[in-house]
Image (tube, rainbow, N blue to C red; front, side):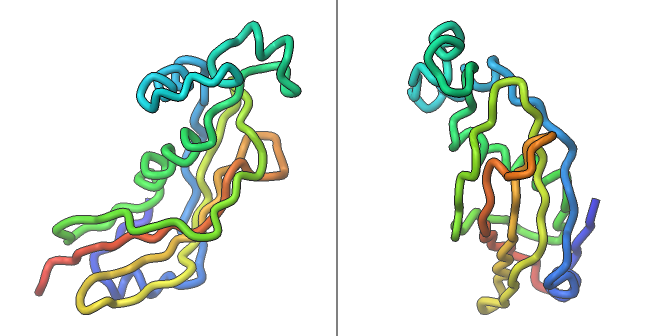
Length: 154
């Protein structure tokens, strides 16, 4: 795990790969829980029998936004930013869903530091990310996530 204690330490990694998370199983229970939380019960996600018969994937698939929602969990496996008062998710750029995550697949996050800026004492880190599916060439999701880190004043 990468440990960051200051803006300068973070900036030293500009253009570098920051790390890769562990693999995470996306099973039907996780998909059903996400469907309940978001009120998105589209059959392609939750109706196993219908998906087996009617879906081109012959299985249920994860919601695209479920895949995206796993980013913070996996990001926290890659990096620990210390000496901050708070961190805020700031935005997403160039986000693209490459292919669906079929139920029972495992995914992981691969990241690099795309850009970093000091916004009057607030660190804006733009992290290029790719959520990969085990055994697949094409990622499930990729883009640039922006985080604001409020480092404590010295």
